[in-house]
Amino acid sequence: MSILVIAEHDNNEIKGATLNAVAAAQAIGSDVDILIAGANCSAAADAAAKIPGINKVLVADNAAYEFMLAENVAPLVAELAANYGHVLVPATTNGKNVIPRVGALLDVQPISDISAVISEDTFQRPFYAGNIVATVQSSDSIKVMTVRTTAFDPVAEEGGSATIEAVSAVHDAGVSEYKGEEVAKSDRPELTAADVIVSGGRGMQNGENFELLYKVADKLGAAVGASRAAVDAGFVPNEMQVGQTGKIVAPGLYIAVGISGAIQHLAGMKDSKVIVAINKDEDAPIFQVADYGLVADLFKALPELDEAL
Amino acid sequence: MKILVAVKRVADYNVKVRAKSDNTGPDLANVKMAINPFCEIAVEEAVRLKEKGIATEIVVVSIGPQTAQEQVRTALALGADRGILVTTDTDLESLAVAKCLKAVCDNENPDIVLLGKQAIDGDNNHTGQMLGALTGWAQATFASELSIDGDSATVVREVDAGLQTIQIKLPAIVTADLRLNEPRYASLPNIMKAKKKTIDSTTPADLGVDVAPRTTLLKAEPPAERQAGIKVEDVAQLVDKLKNEAKVIS
Image (cartoon, rainbow over the protein chains, first blue to last red):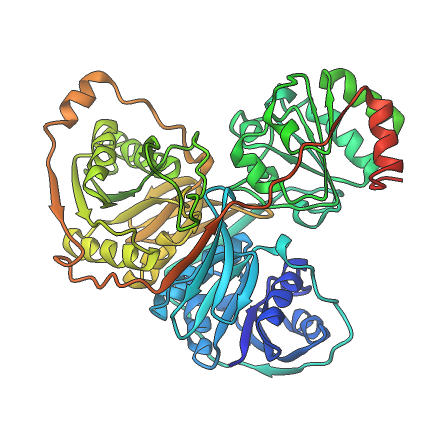
């Protein structure tokens, strides 16, 4: 049976998370199609067609799909899913919003955040804040899943030439409406795509002090993240949150500053390649996962680090 | 306006739950249980809507073992008016939970169903969206702000890029994110009062829900553990290690 990957895109470009989801799909089987649901999204469809190894790109181009509202997109996906054995989506906020609704429409139990493919019906996924890895077998005829993007290396962006096929089905439930978006403008890389991340915790004491992190991050070309404690305390907005219920990241280098290392935070970053912890409390649990630990006052260490880079 | 709030009994968020030594599942023996933190935020939001005079009745529902009555009582102590406990001795999948909630919605006809965005045990992030599909109602997941205006609601949602605002028609499903509110502590008088509030008990079978599982947990194992590395003396040594040993910066 073929596999359908629902693309994460902004109508113009394919988001990187799609490439990780395609990698997961290709670990299941070779017959992979991509769905672009959006409005005026032909540029995104053209980009998807260039991903190597894709059979078909299905394009549902309609105003009802412009903002990926689940009430409209889920019935579309459920309708298309009849032709597929698997439906995958990256575990972004869009993916997590839409896919359970698809599962219930199909009377299927979705599987969240798959981190490995064991066979076409058996998958691994973390639960309990990543403290346990479950191996789960599905008996549903269609497997509906979100993909933990950090667990699958992205496929190449270019080199393929899939056929593009228009999907005419229009589902407009008329019960929800997009009103607007407040997007943090930043020249720094996106958290989930960054190769280096500098994160701050409660130890930063306030939002202004995050400037110290931004300076270091800019020297390293890094994204800036935060622990839930820092978000809870109102230092920084929630989209910076790394952790169990925030963003899951696995950069080449993760620098945790003033973060104690609660299990909820570790769940979001412990798959990073190299972890550095800077904390004045030498017993902080973050040091148990850090490759390099520096016991120091961050207000002294950060300017020094800025200077040294 | 009637609000239905769903709450789940889970291992307390401070507990690091580990796999059983025979790898058959999570080891929950003697683990402190609590109301799922996101569900608590959902309860608080409902109570605030009642305090504002928007909600007239708050019904709290939980699906789980008989002991989940404790979590229903907690919600009653926070301000819910009455409870429903759907008892089951098996750990239900989110599809079955959503079907039970759909049956409760059919009986109760709420205007808004408030849930947590995710339970911190299964980490699925499913139930609200699935209930949305089964009822055909609008859904606003990851809510950080909720305002009601007649027969519609405006919800600010925490999305990857920042904040998204949507307007949904009622009845609707809203799932709570971290910043929707900061839950209160139940006062002693309210805890006492909660003991007198009604909790109706039912079962999935009574609700006509087939809870047969669709997935099998073959194994539950600890993840690959990271080894603690070394402590460096100062920033200079740290930079040196990152450049020359780990080779992650240049």
